[in-house]
Length: 491
Image 1: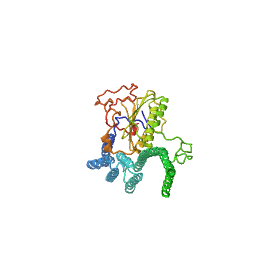
Image 2: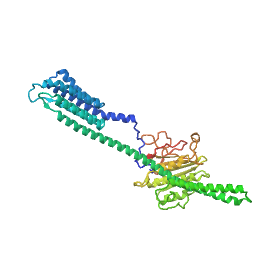
Image 3: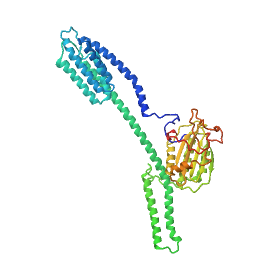
Image 4: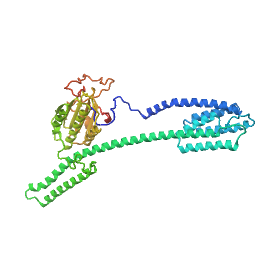
């Protein structure tokens, strides 16, 4: 049985959570082929630049030094693009200045100067990596410095016989910077989009939580308002039940009644803060368009039989079992218990059509235990029109009373919802819970932790999922352990 706990797809039990270190390791593995490719390109550029420097008559040592400086700049740009740009530009200046004497008297056409083809390719790769890593303003500044340096060498210093490459090189660098800046902007836009989607999802989850709490508060308003009204009426009637009441007693009872009425008024004002979006219902107490508080009282455990009959009439096979004698539960506990069972049955109708459902209610001195288990669906599951936060409402109702709700799939394709509500509607100490355990006779469902979905440590064979006497089809062992918790998004 799937619930309205989340609009996301169900999460498999064997899904692993990827840690940040594992994610970084995966990114490093993905970047390794790119680093290797850049290194090979850098080696080719270094060899080509060394060969082209031979036309400048620089000598073997200087040619190798300048050529491999260009290749090293390409590799360095992967981590330090600013330093790589400076190294590449410095290598070009050294090569151009050192080659100037060789241009005098050189036969036509002269060699490419001040930029060789290998140098243009190396500096373009450095510019691309620089534009990807730094802001566009820094990339444009580096481009302007390169253009100024080229103009000084070629225009101010000049040479004798050469083929000019300054304008072409600067134009190529400008195009590369433009492309790199565009890719950087695209990456930043994607990052901002992911961040915005994350913020939107968090806001949506927060709004869902607030809406569910507001709905619970509106329901509890009837319970609290009833008690305050009873206090007011009793304080008004009490003087009539006493023969010759004193003036002091009359004043005290009148003060109690006045305080009860003021508290009721303030309660309605507090509910106004949680008002619905319906402008005709400013206190958020009525149904949409009703404009007034509902006349029907809030349901209690006495109405569970009617709820089960309505569910059977909707086409679901429901079996109920009640264990123990019900104590005098507070109205809030009864309302929460009814809503939890109602929501679980609604989820079974919506997500497990044709299944068998078992509802178990166990009364204990410590609290109320609820178990709603359904078998696998027997009919095609249609898309759910629900709001997507049924489990959230169950959890909030139980947490408000100091209890808890656990929901998880069963071994045979069904779903189980387990709830515990303290008798007095107050939180129980953890030590007391561990000491008391689960009462005898309460059956719990454990999802399998083996590869085949079965627990190898179980002694009893699983029940037949097609057995109508076992609507949950869970093959659960009897015991005192606590159910295995699952995340709300799994439902």
